[in-house]
Image 1 (cartoon, rainbow, N blue to C red):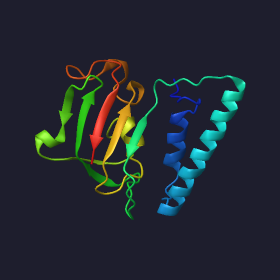
Image 2: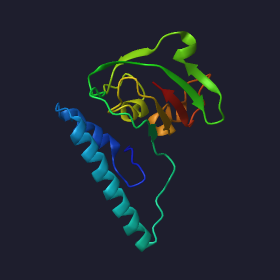
Image 3: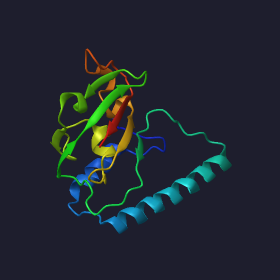
Length: 160
């Protein structure tokens, strides 16, 4: 089974491709790449509008990040510490490192956490705050994580 986003991009194939490269993007390449993707996305939206095609909106990872710039970004293989508060869409908190008194530590981009974290934290700066809205297909899928996370749940994480 493939994991596709709104535009039909196969994230598993992209993740496999990403894992084949060891090169790290510097800040300028990252910012230029983001700008190019935004321009491309606008062009695709314009073309879809001309064709009267409505893209699916469900199941997309949404990342809200600060506008802070930094020299150190999270890359695959980095050992990172992250404070977070995980909530369901109804506001119920199911887990929080703040209440436990310490951040979670893991090797980034190696599957030690849910896919939504590996995708949503890419390029995050030290000290940056991000909010992730993770669809179930990038979280705990249909099985959930009983008893606190029901199957098919969209997860919201506040991270720093």
